[in-house]
Length: 289
Length: 246
Image (cartoon, rainbow over all chains, first blue to last red; front, side, top):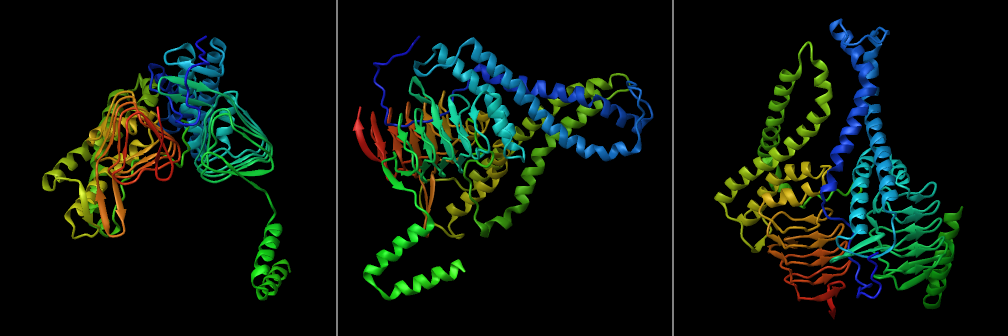
């Protein structure tokens, strides 16, 4: 609708993710209410039986009489309730996310402030914010992948995701990919009064180093490695089986095994001082044995 | 958005190990006195709602009670720390400049006391489900000027000598430090970010930087001490250099 392809847009400057506060962000209250309501309904029987044990009367008779060992179940009940609360909120807000997707299907491109895409992008992100925040506060590290899958993000099997800022929309991650601490994967970008959305694709068995930024439109092919403290510029393509470093990425290095690099080091040292080669070789043999 | 649990973005307030133990009592007093309103509220709640016939109302309203109690702790912690801060500022007024990093230096000493007072409210408000309450709401109580419609939810902003204008976007994990420790020197200097500025992800602003209107700082770059970024221009690098004028 409001796509402006001719407008001036500085593709090299990477801004930031994040969205403005809107009245729709009060959906957190609704999510809290739904989670609390389900908890209350599920725990009604347990609370009733504990109340019976305490006072001798019950406020509703379910037919079963409480025993003394119900007290032993109390810690298990509390711990299970935390997980129940989080899962209810995740799947409830996943449903809202899909309804929003039905109302206005997500599209790629450049949009203006106040357009329909701008509004619905904010709404989607505010629905996804709280469940992901909750999933990451729990001790199980793979719970946030379930949360992302409930929002329709394609995440492969055995992926490490739990220490980064990852957008839930227009992100595709392959199997066995490993992301490190403090990474940013942005599929959207707010630039003054414009919004830019483009898909990110991360292949199979990629490694994303710590403190990196992946900007919208980048494609990482299979087995590619993004080095520490580097960022990709918009619409960049990282080839597979190579290490990519730079701000923005401009250097590529070959991946080599530890033995290969050690042999190269021996060769380089050999040209200068021949005495040290034997020492190095002995060390190598010693390590192998 | 979607920040990891280990990076809550608490505004930096380091405390000197040599002074910390002297003010342990003050720290505990702040914590306990900020919990008093919630305990009063809970007492009122239990006595009001718990009755023989209408006990089910108690359980229905319980989720709202927990939600309100968390916010009561956070807001009362902020207000009590502001009260203590005003008393400390009356004793010694904070000012900019270069100081010595030693306990004898009065400015450094009182800076750490201010950090001890702020530590608990900053820690508590960082774990709030509403992201704007963390920086925009709490830092305004400590005298940081933050304009309307700015995004600064996932960044570390120090709680003194910072002023941020309207419509500013500050990226993920970028830090704004109005203090610096260089060997034996301790520096406090004001940072000014004017309107419509765009700061990328993972930037670092050192004390004394001034960013003029409509300037843009690219991602992964940092500024020097007393660095001035001009209007309508793009900066990038380590440290930031002028890339082009738009």
